Amino acid sequence: MASQILLVDDELPVLNALKRVLRREGHEILVAQTGQEALATLHQAELAVIVCDYGLGSMTGAEVLAKAANIRPNTVRITVAQVEYGS
Image (tube, rainbow, N blue to C red; front, side, top):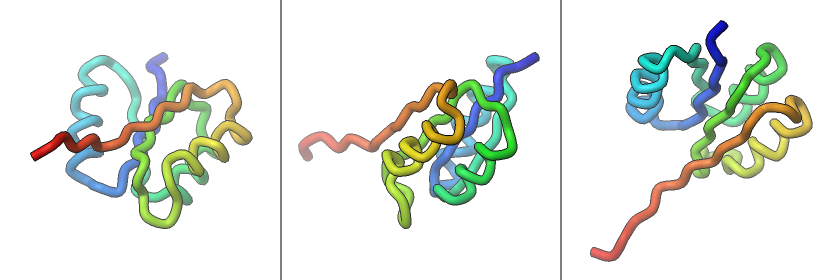
């Protein structure tokens, strides 16, 4: 059975790009564009990994992952953030 991975990002192009890459590796990919949507998915699915953008709007990625730890303590949690280097 393929690992289920939840991708959380409020930018659809980013979600689609990550989804394409990870599906090629044989994973089953679920997506959420908000923290609330991600938490609802966590209640419904056994996930191997949740990859969450740090900036989501109403919740930070850190808040989503903290709540995720209470819902699915064995799920690996990864946060990603955009890093801008000097101009």
